[in-house]
Image 1 (tube, rainbow, N blue to C red):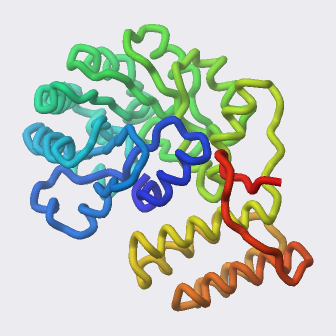
Image 2: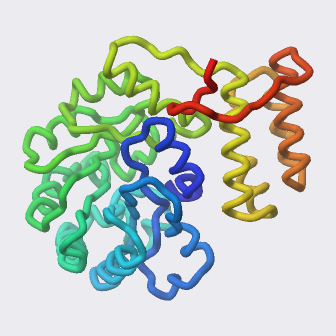
Length: 325
């Protein structure tokens, strides 16, 4: 997800049970390869393998060039985005706008697969452009003929955006006819919902997107529930506090002080969503200009919630991201 699945967040999600974390979309426009923003999005130093980079665009040659570029720079899986509903992406005939042109879809997929023959190429898409043109089955056939290795299907059309309920019946229909793995995506917000989607669609895996914001431990909760049928105990305040502090430090280190503080604000908002006094706290945190004041405010807020003046060591020190007892 653009603006979210940067290296600090990917590393955190993998640490907390995600089997695969995909990079932010990287533009296929070769003119942007040299920009700091694009270089940062393709930064994978120290990241757990496999490295999966998502590319977006509408020109087959440029998409092929983008795939080669990213493989040469460490990508081990190339994921093609044909699911983004954002206007700025669709207005340049990329993302889910491509679902209106199945011939172009085929040309792009074939070009990318041929460009990186030793690297698996996957596709992320939606059920169709709108409810009158749910052409995901056609896209699946095109993908299989092109050599795509797996398909992730978000259960909404482009016109739906993120409104309404995900269409799991469409995902189930696509899975039933597929000869490649199908990954279900959309509205998977809890361990119980994850199991329901897997059971309903018969998908080979599930993909979590927006639900992971502010709760990266969701992956370990889902994994535990699928294995045992029992809900894992949710993290306590001190555990959430420790996870957030580690995330903040990673953001400061990755982006630098100015950008790190700015980007951290949205993550702090997600982590504190639903907690007592969080609305007023978010208004306050958005005014703070530097890492020290931002970190101090987070500490003060969680100390206040816990009813304690302080407690030692908020670091993460076990495998699933929870503080050891």
